[in-house]
Length: 408
Ligand code: T4K
Image (cartoon, rainbow, N blue to C red; front, side):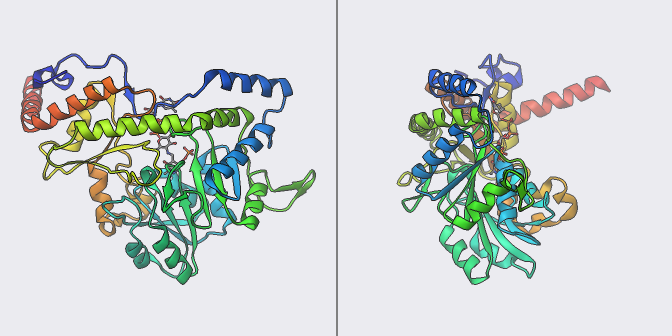
């Protein structure tokens, strides 16, 4: 444990971890079960194209979510692109900027303009009142993001979509295993999209899925993810190759068997962070709603620089020096990344809560690859850094001046 600032690696001490502690280390599940499945798929020489493991995984996900259709895909981004196209979105679609860049790119890739809308400062999800203000004649849809597994205000967004004849799609990449008012995420909007990337609580190495209760839409999505083929030699839509492979589905089936264990570990980690970081001025841990199902996959620290004794970026530098690779998801916000920052250079003025949050968040390591002893050490470094923030800042500034003087 480090209590003195000179022990911190950022000031020349030895890093507390020899190996990097990552955000997003994959959960593995039962290795033997997975390898058995790999042998099975090799034996039957059926490696992709709607194979038996893909069908089994889709059926299991449908059952788990209580949804009529699950169409798996090769990743979450392609799933978003297909859902957007199948729903006939065009013109402008209202999205948060506080999301992974894939949400915006999936629209722009098809020459649909993402209109960045502000979020609610507590839930970090789309603010329905702000959405209403962003609707213009070219708007065809709203795409909410259940960021950190926190459901959007689905009722208000559905009402708005209905009243204004807009399509409603959710990017549920973070929300597998979460519920809203007792219903599993997957049942809201016209369709919802999951990412099953390796860094997600439930993964298929790379992968994703579109889930919907709309039979017609599901049929269209199935064709679109397979080049538009409706028979051996018959193509009826423009389509793409969005198929999930059998080895990914084998991983998915194995991950699904351990999902409740992964979530339990995440919850234990989250509760430990909450206890150990309690009472630090200007620092808030994003609260997961414990009366609903949550996957606790993201441990989200918010550092209010006006109140806390440390800047978020200095805390990140201190953690990185200790080999704790905390991440600033989703800094600096999609609107500040290309091509959007060139298209809409003043977008930030319309989304002040997003701008603020992008300066405040820091995501901490969790998952089955992180143990309670490591979390205790991470919390100790955070506490020492925050308690001594102004002093660390001074020492670092003096060192910068000294090295500048030495150079000149
Ligand atoms: N919408 C939302 C809201 C999303 O969050 C995402 C993806 C998508 C859409 C798109 O879905 P996909 O097309 O990706 O299925 C990561 C993930 O790559 C990305 O899937 C995820 N969101 C995003 C939030 O996080 P990066 O660029 O931060 O990933 P990366 O490669 O730096 O991984 C994070 C850390 O995890 C690394 O420091 C090391 C560790 N790691 C990673 C991998 C892949 C491992 O230890 N082992 C591994 O195999 O985006």
